Every structure is written in structure tokens, then in C-alpha cells.
Amino acid sequence: MLILDVVLSVSYWSLRSLGSSGAVMELLTGTGLWPVAIFTVIFILLVDLMYRRQRWNSRYPPGPMPWPVLGNLLQVDLDNMPYSLYKLQNRYGDVFSLQMAWKPMVVINGLKAVWEVLVTCGEDTSDRPAVPIFEYLGLKPRSQGVVLAPYGHEWREQRRFSVSTLRNFGLGKKSLEEWVTKEAGHLCDAFTAQAGQSINPNTMLNKAMCNVIASLIFARRFEYEDPYLIRMLEILEKSLTEIAGFVPEILNAFPILLHIPGLADKVFQGQKTFMAILDNLLTENRTTWDSAQPPRNLTDAFLAEIEKAKGNPDSSFNDENLRMVVADLFSAGMVTTSITLSWALLLMILHPHVQRRVQQEIDEVIGQVRHPEMADQARMPYTNAVIHEVQRFADISPLNLPRITSRDIEVQDFLIPKGTILINNLSSVLKDETVWEKPLHFHPEHFLDAQGHFVKHEAFMPFSAGRRACLGEPLARMELFLFFTCLLQRFSFLVPTGQPRPSDHGTFAVPVAPTPYKLCAVLREQGQ
Image (cartoon, rainbow, N blue to C red; front, side, top):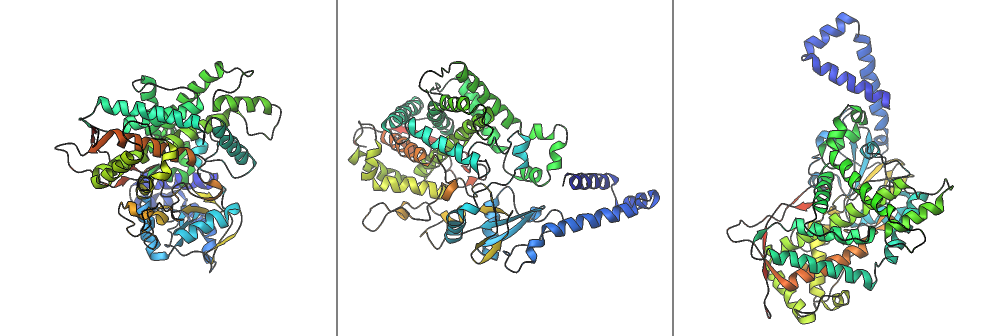
């Protein structure tokens, strides 16, 4: 495969540098390279046919005809994949195929098909495909943490450890709830300091969510003005923009390009810098760790497992996996919740009647003095419905992460061969026109019955489903409820005077964030 990539790259750049077809013909004829050129073209076409051979099966999912070598790369908008897939779904149905260069992919749409893949066929669809850009960044198959790790012994070991350790350090217990409530108070104080001003809330939200994760991983909290925290969040934001879009997809399709001197380092500069920051924090934690004392945080617990695993070649507890588990929790656990809260505040200023109704329920159940508690959630159906509708409408992880079939499977009567990459289009479920009354609009009543009781629909799966469902879902649900209610208990959020009405459209990235906007936080008075 590497040889083929080299041949393709050399052929492409050599022909392009000659400038015109006449010059190419003259060079080939004059140097006797014509037979080599013919052989190369035939070889490429044969390899291309080999990789699309599954299309010859009558039960293989339909899809757009791929071009030689490039496949369907030029037929989809890599900077807005959800919309491209929406159009293809309307044309080819809920299960359709794509060819991204030589990689066969099948896109799964709609509640029934997605559930069949994630749950019914979960054992055969939980593996991850190799991602060349991640391997370039140093993520080997046995050191990819929890999110990206291949489905197998190492992944199971790391997931069990992460779930049990998060539980031991407070997930689902009063101790973590108190920490989140305390951090929500710090966030409200930061908003109070800028009350009445036109502000972008994202920076403050990022700092608050970062502190919740830092409490679990390092048992520490950063002040909001700490330069180290500010620098870390800037680098993290940059790193997330580097792994989605046209350039990363091209590098994954043609891994030989990763060997061009300096190219990949420039493209993934933020990724490497962020990992260096985490390395510094891990080193600091390691120097103060005392193996004779109970673990202070998740990092201590992992270091203890590394000590136990010494001499065991089958163990996944090593320094590389520690780095990746920490990175997973920061990126997946912090950024997603922060962006969801950013969506929540945006939707409150765009729908003030919804905001007022949430505040009315907060006043009736909690009041304006006592801090919100998770126990209040059961008595606040409308607030709960609004939070769920924010997650559905925002749709921040529309395509989930890719899977790969570990054996042949059948989905909706189609045969999907072993080794096929699966794209589970969660957006097609969260905005399914056959399920939701107003799928493209913000409508909290999606989660309320005729009597006003909260109802959770089976098509609500922003955290995915099955074996690879987000392990941080309980923490995210706690953070969303406590932070959201604390903010609306103390403030009313408005479009700043003189500012245009913000858009409710997002920007496709990892994850999908709202278009940058500003708001004005106004302190509520008693009875408001």
C-alpha cells in the first residue's frame, strides 16, 4: 500500500509540474517512459477496482458512483458533512455507501438502522478503524485510551477503569455534586463581574468545565485568570479544529502525504502542543504522588495500576495510555459540555419566553436563595425538557466517531462486509422528520406529554448507544442541570442592546459549536 501511495504521489506531482498534456506526451515519448506510464495507470485502475469490488454484490448498499482513485471525495462537502449526508440519504435511503479514496464506507441513518448497528450488531460494530493522522501523532493501537482504542481487551480494561474510578471519585455521589455546585458559583461570580456588558460566554464556560475535569484528574482547581489555564484552553480549542475538515480527510485518505517534511507538524501543531501541556501536568502530579496513600485523583489511581502491571505484557496500564485517558476526559468531557451550555444560553436569548418559563419553575421549586440540587430535577419537568431539547437541537456530535465491521453483518437487508467503515449519522436520528414534531426547530415540547410530564424519547441519543456509548454521560447530565439552573436562577440573558440577533446555526467541527455570539447577563432581583 505504501508503494502504491508513493507511485501515485510521484506520478501526480511529476505530471502536474510539466504544465501541459503536450509536454507530458513529449517527455514520455522522448524518454521511453510510455510503457511505464501505461503500466502505472493500469495498475492504479486495477487496485481501484479491487477496493470497490464489494459494490458488485447486489446486496451492498447503493451510493454515488466513485471516481477512480479519489472515490467520492470530491462529491461530498468535507467542511459540512451532515448536510452532504442529508442530501445523499434523501437520494439513496437510510443505508448508503461511499468510497473515500480506497476506503469503503457505509453511512447509517435513521433510528431503526442506527439502533440496529449500535446495539443489535454491537459486538461486530464496536471496533475503530485505523486513523493515519492519529497514528502520526503517536497514538498506537495499544495506547489510544478509551475513545479511540480498538475494541478488545485493552479497551475493555481502560473503560472499566475509567467508569469505576470516576464513580469512586464522586460520579453519582454527593461529593462531586457539591464540587460542581461550588464551581457553578464561581462561574456565576464571573458573570456577575461583567453583568450588563456585552460578552462572549464561551471563555468563562470553558474555564468552569475545565475545573470540573481537573478536579477529577488532578484534584486541583485553576483560578479563571490563571495564565496557564488560559493558555491551555486556547491550545485545546486550536487542536480540535485540526482534526476535522478537508485537510485531515485528505491526509487520512493518502497517508503518504504525512511523510512530506514539515507538512503534518504544521497541520497538527495545536495537537502536539496540547499533549505537551498535559505531560507537564502529569509530571507535576507524579512528583507529588505517594503510593502508600489513598489516591487523590484519577491520575494517582492510574499510576497505582501501572505499578501493579509491571511485568505483565498483556496489561494496557502504561504511561502512553495514561496520557490518552487524560486527553480523552479533557477533550470529550470538558469541551462537549461547555459547548452544550453555550448553545443553551444562545437558545435562551433567542427564545425569551422559554427562558422565563424555566425561571418560573426554578423559583417555584428551588427559589432564588438555595443552590440547585440534582434531587430537584425530578420536580422540574420543563427545565429538564429544555436541557434535553438543547442537546437534540444543537446536535454537537452529528456523525459520532467511525466504527469498522469486524465481520460481515446485515443491516436493513443490506450486506455490509467485514472491514467496512461505518458512519453512524446521529443527526439523522436527532432530527428525524418521522419522529420529531418540529425537527429543525427548538421546541422543548418534544420532551413533554399532554399533561406536562417529562418524556424521554428513544430517538434521543446525543451520547450514542451500545458498547461505545459515552462513559461520561452521567457527569455531563449533572453538569448541564446544575450549571444551567444556577445561571438562570441568578441571571436573565438578553441580546445586547444594539447587537444583531445571533444565528442559531452551528459551525461544523469537532464538536459543532454555535456561530460566535455575544450576550448580556442581567442580575435578577427577588420576584423576577
